[in-house]
Structure formats: C-alpha cells, structure tokens
Amino acid sequence: MTGTDAERQLDALEQSITGCRRCPRLVAWREAVAADPPKRHRGEEYWARPVPGFGDPKARILVHGLAPAANGGNRTGRPFTGDRSGDWLFAAIYRAGLSNQPESINREDGLELFDTFVNAAVRCAPPDNKPSPVERDNCAPWLEGELALLTEVRVVVALGNFAWEAMLRSVRKMGGEVPKPKPRFGHQAETTLIAPGTDKWTGPEKWMLLGCFHPSPLNTQTGRLSAGMLDDVFARARELAGLGPHG
Image (cartoon, rainbow, N blue to C red; front, top):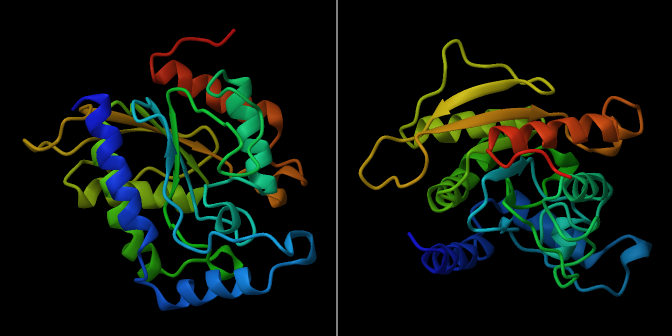
C-alpha cells in the first residue's frame, strides 16, 4: 500500500468514525457538554462528534489513549488536543523528536507528527472518563480499521491500563496472538504481539506493546508520572521502532 493509498483510506475511515452514533449515552454526553461548556470555553464551537486518530500514515509508533476529554478532544476534534493531558503528551513527543512543535491547541495549529500516530480506544468523550464495556466494544472496529491501515507501526505506546487492555483485545479479535498468561499493564511494561496472519494483512508480523502511565493531571500533579518518565518511554519507543536515539 502506497502512502497515497493509506492516506486516502484513512481519510475514508475518518469520515465513517466521525458519523458514528452507536452509543446513545456517549452521543448525549458529548452534545450536552458542547451545549453548556465551562466559562473558559464559552463561545467556542465544539466538535461534539467521535474523534478519529491523526498523525503520520507511515508511523512506526502508535500512541494509544483512553478517550477524548469532554472539553479537550470533544471540543477540538483531535485526541489530546486542548487539554492538560495533551500538554504533557505533546511536549514529550516533541522532546523525542517526533513532532514539529511542543503543544497542540486546535486542529489548525500546524502540528505535524513524525513517525507517530495518536488515537484512542473510545472515540467519544465518556462521562467521568469511564466508558462502559459495551461502548468500548462498539468503538473497537474503528481501532481495528486504523491498525489495518497503519502498516508501518512497530510499537504501540499504551497510555494507561484501559488502553493496554483495549489493544490486547483488538489484536486477539483481529486474529493476532497475545502471550499467555495475559501480560499485565505497568509503566514501561513491554510485551510482543503477533499480528494477524492473513493474506489481507500487510503490516509487520510483530508489534511491541509498551506501557506508560496516562499523563492525566491525577498522575502528573501527584508525581506518579514525571516528564523524565515520559521521556524514557518515548526514548524506548524510538529504540524499539528502529528510529535510533534523538539528538
């Protein structure tokens, strides 16, 4: 698949994702937040739709999160863009040499990702950041569609246990292999995943799954996750992806 083919198919998948209304609770929540935003975002036009992944179609590193924030990705239409978790994440991606700027505030801010793609297990903002199992499973085909098109991915950085478990589940569902006993999430935990062995699969035979604490305020403000810890994860992701050290 050429870069142009991948971009065209990712664009088509994005159109399908953004039109999804499979989960009544999430549809109601994302639209309610947009209709009554906090004072700091009054007057802004909210995206208020499912949020597709974005980045380099030839990415070797996939950064996989939980879901858009109600006043972050649900507002901007791009995962992690415009919220405090994203402030930490995009700064770390920039320090790792994987983007052209250290922050992302909206879809038109000029951010470019190099060798990196960012997505989430659930594409609509969930109340209390807690999607239900049904909502997670309703979103799984969107993740699987992106995985099938991101044929250069070698490393998945899972931000938190929810993202880790969602990735394991989708790999198994697609016909790939997960080690037994099932690998447990942890910061800098690593495991090898065997990709689907079908004629239609054109991606790598193996992925490395790399765990990272989610850069949520709960983790960053308490010191559970530091900037240095994030930098170590992305340095390791570069190494596993065959990109070499940055700088």
